[in-house]
Length: 58
Image 1 (cartoon, rainbow, N blue to C red):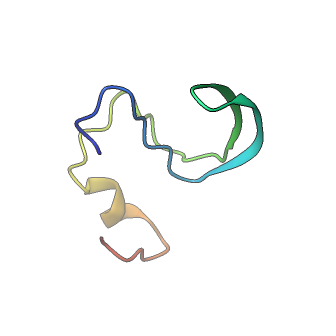
Image 2 (image 1 turned 135 degrees about the vertical axis):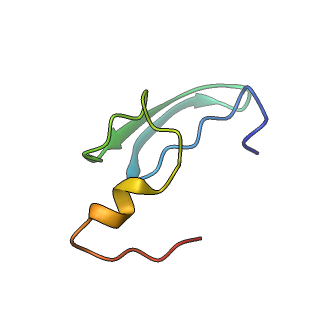
Image 3 (image 1 turned 30 degrees about the vertical axis):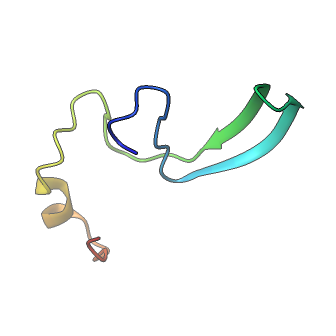
């Protein structure tokens, strides 16, 4: 899934509305704050070391 250019994984997000029909639709998504700049993230895990709340790794 992560290699498909048509799929974007949105964590901490919630679908609010889906409009249209199969093959031609629009989705409204509410994204919660991540407190991480996703453009700079390289998934190294350094932020998890500093996080006061311990998260379960997948």
